[in-house]
Length: 336
Image (cartoon, rainbow, N blue to C red):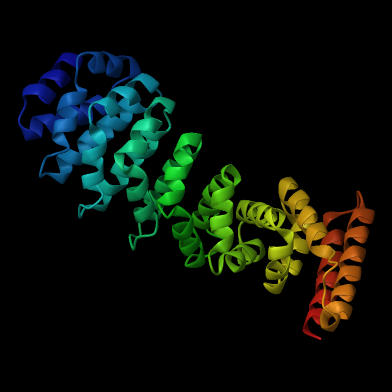
């Protein structure tokens, strides 16, 4: 079987090559390994230049099957010069080809040895542009975000990722999407990874107009993990310069969402929300005109946190009712 597949890929016409690529995808990993050793990556890469979308799809599927579970194969595919070809496929008219091209980039980027090649290839800029494009292939946008996430694990690439405009692109994507969606959750996860790795990235994110509002909205309406990523970013921003950002965060109405999160969020969210509440709670530089209102809010927040802690091992729904009542009181004070 391996000999037949090899013959079709190297010497067959277009139809034979398509058949060979499809058959390769169905082989066991052991047989695929033998084919890689015989040099079949080269004809598969050549097929990506075809005018036939069927041939391109078959080739991409075969390359993905070769890369799956094998770091060595991922390195060999990268060394074959596949990236520029994949970049060109981003602009084709076939959605399935675009999906497979980005899936291939995701798979190849998971290999540590390939990350430097990705960084020097222009892939980061292309992925960032795709994330915020009008393309409605959600799964491919998720793969593009995951690819960028893979690259952030290589610290030397972080400055390049920041300079690509990814922070603004992610914030725009989050702003224009349903906050509870998986897309927002993954975008927030990537944003957290970037700002946690770089002080300059954190400052850049905090300085973008509307960024704090977007984070607060995600804390209110996001998925559990989306809320977790958002509160961590907001906490990092507040910690970076409390005097500068405390008032900005409070003005976006973060308190109700934080209080809710401190009770029914993930374990990490609860801790981060309470830490941020403490940072936002006290202020020694309030103007006289806002002093009384600030004091009322601080006293109420203090009581809320004390009563939440006092609930201890009681039922979660009891804690939720308590927080809902306190949030209602907080909102009354905020509007008076």
